[in-house]
Amino acid sequence: MSFLSGRWPRKTFNLVLIASLIAAYILIEVSPFFNLVIEHLGIGALNPVLILLTVLLNIGFFLIIILRLHDLNRAGWWSPVIFIPVVNVVFLILLIIWPSSTERHKFRSMCKTFVKILAILFLAVLLLQVDDDLSVEVSEYVSLIENRVANGSEAYLYLNGMAALEEKNILAQGRRLLTHYNNSPKNLFGPVSETKKLTKDEKLPTPDNKNKMYCQLSKAGCLNKVIASSNHWENQIKKFSVITKRYEKFISYSEFTTMTKADIGSPLPSYHYLTFGNKIKIFSALSLARSGKAEEAIEMLLNDNKYLRKHLVLADNLIHKLIFINLLSNNLDIIVYIHSAYQVDKLTEIAHLSHSEMSMKYPLVREFIQEYNMFLDADRNTDGWNGLPSWMVKIIFKVNMTINARLMSYKELISLDNLPAEVFAKSVVNIEAAPKFEPNYRNYGGSIMIEEPITYLSKYIAKVHDLDAKISLANYLLSNKTQPLESPYGPLYNKITERDNFICLDGPSKEKYNIRCIPEKI
Image (cartoon, rainbow, N blue to C red; front, side):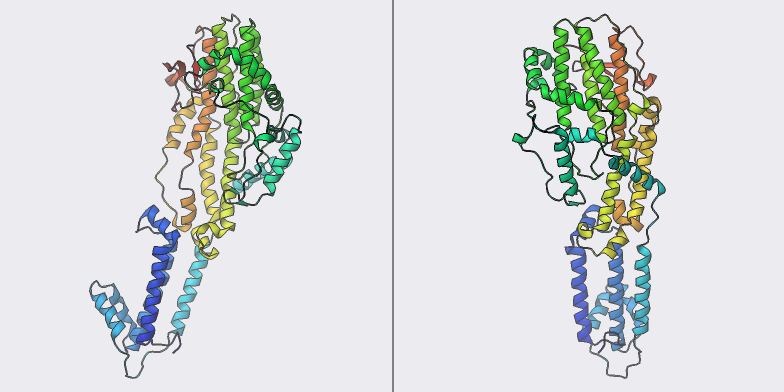
């Protein structure tokens, strides 16, 4: 008897019923995808794929019930009985055990009805795959980043190759590492295989991180350790003079562009060499001050700051921006210390950050493009969807809809970039109060991917304002507290607190790294 004949005998019905139950069990209980959804949202979650498969299974179940009823010479309208509690159990048992009717078959073939159902389902699948158009602003951001990368950057190659041995060509080393990364196969989260890394014997030696002289100045007691190690300053300055020279060479560049594709998981260049170089430069300033040349030491650091501030403007990735915020913060700590410890009479006033120095637009745009590329990879490569066919992935994941939704979050953050510190302090409170996550059932997979809000990025915008606040605090201390203290955050935060041998200026965000603080007591 054909599949679409008007009736199914008991044996066929029972075999198909068993197969349907097994299929339902596999889809709902065994599939890692659905287990993940159920664990994340609970059994009653309205996942679109779960709904679709449930509908398909129910349609198939109704079809076989109707065919079995026809086999018993009963109309298909009896099928809704399956929804009546208790009665449905008896009804199903009867369908399973009752023999076929021997009377004349009075029901026609269901072929036409079945074809209509299939046509409706096919149309529904097509409609569920319809995506939105990509926002014009997305294309503008993509072009902005891609054009910068295409222009190239000697400064980036120099930083990327900064770990090269003394006799090696730094630019050639940086270019070689970049080429290796660009040619490496990549997946959703970066290179599939480990990118080329230099062995210990292939890298320029660096100071021991465990050496107390190289502690982070933002941590309590660090400056005391640095001062207590004064007998070792000259040794470290001579031993790592190559790092200092490379640090000075890099910060002297007047251009910088991150040359790796904006991918999540792309390798970082040798930023730790800049951190070591800055610390050794600080040893040089402290040594100069100890020799009776405190004013020259301060001038050395102020001149260093000019180059560091230039890199605040050039920074086009978040790490670069944060690194140079910390380096500037370190120099401010030492400038205030030397001025106070050696009783320098010359009044030094440090200019506040300009808008271009504070701007986080390029780093935030690059963060967005990283997610943009991740979404495109998720759309092109369905391996990450636990084996779901591409047509089903397109039902639950609309790449353009996902990107456009994420763009709105980044635009809100970028809008904070132009605000004065006082207005930013008020606005950041609102943006961090993120609304409760509500999935978009047309784009369920995409909405899960962007479920985590990016409001945490606002704290990085706050860091440049905190650095500007630190400049206010430094100027106040450099004037021996004779000049009025004026916080960029406004009168509400124009208060000083002391903790852990730090003097700190208040601000709207919690201070974890003491950017708004300066070591006061030695």
